[in-house]
Image 1 (spheres, rainbow, N blue to C red):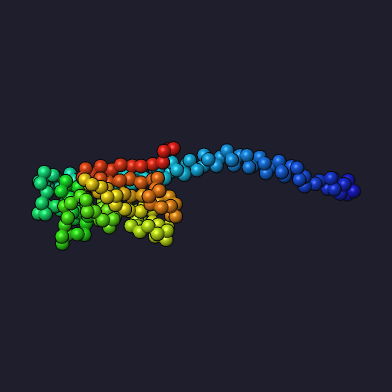
Image 2 (cartoon, helix red, strand yellow; image 1 turned 120 degrees about the vertical axis):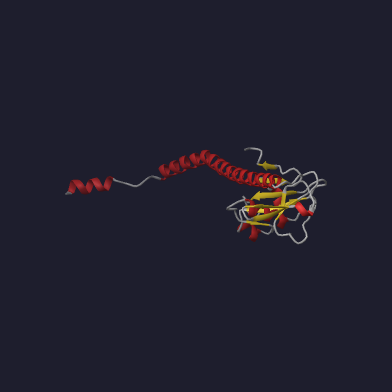
Length: 197
């Protein structure tokens, strides 16, 4: 029994130097791994944005194709032929035949330079079958509850609907790095990502 109790007295905990060495080693490994981890987050956000933009682009192209197969032409859209029914959702189209809203059926507007954020949000919510939550508000509280912020970029010849993937809710929309634009004149969908991706 006395031999065992002597052995227990010899066991000690870690020395202060050993603890410091372990902390330094862990810190060194974390410093190497952290940038790679954050790069993976950015890559995942970019992939999410690209998937949503791809679905959106396909949806507006299908709506335009349906509108054309209904016998319409972009050469002279009038208020008589400015609507297209896609799976029971009736979209308004602009003078170039691209979808531009859903609910303004009482007084449809064919102009591509008078778009509202609400019109852009309607396109987003109805063209995608299961749309991510979106907001047209710019305050932090509303942005925290949504995945996408919807706004309009006014243009001389054509407005653009901007769909920003909300990465940081306190970030100002004009500083957004992850977004895609829908050009109302051409139907083109353009994705914008940070330069390092």
